[in-house]
Image (cartoon, rainbow, N blue to C red; front, top):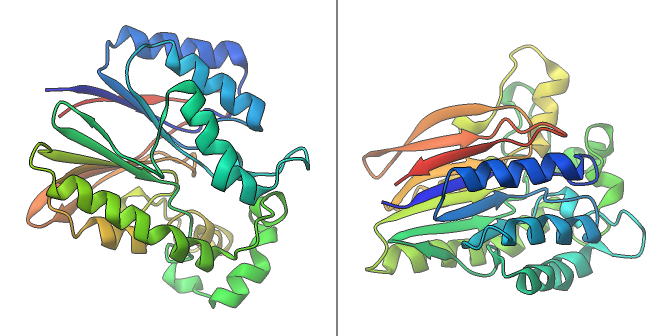
Length: 268
């Protein structure tokens, strides 16, 4: 039974390096078989590299997916499109990290399948539902991605672009006879049980458009080997259950905060 640690929202550059080093030390004390990072690794390429190098010191398999901060063109020298398509996968390869947007990690019969899981507005509270056009136009009122992420795609286009690969990786794990269980790791929450709701709070309800992708959850629900799903992004810890093919699935959003990233240990 493998022992796996999930963490998220490390945010080196906002979070201090000593705090990141303590996180890695604390995780090492758990003696895990593998670690998965659910995005927002660091602020800028140098910090992302440092974080993945720190985790590489554990000398166990480490997997990661990008978060929205990881594709920000912070210094105006690293366009988001280049970060996404080349730079981040190259940093992963250099540090020996499994880049979950390209491949899966299998540890003792458990597959870790991941994606950035970019938001597609499907998590917006129904009471404040707006059109795709309005959500795109108003994003800058709620989320810095509107000006920090400069790739050429809108949110819906990007989600459509990454969906086939995510589905294919899930199918690869599902069809592998050596895989008994699948853990899904995404930056954005993908299940209702991972989304924090605040009834009658219009600002919160509208802004949930940028904090989840429930349509990716529907894709995951097609695969019966999935037993756990973990996300980050919202900094609002949540835990719930989801039924997939007649069995319960644990769905969690980690309660990581700036300068205080947390982790969860699971044995599956």
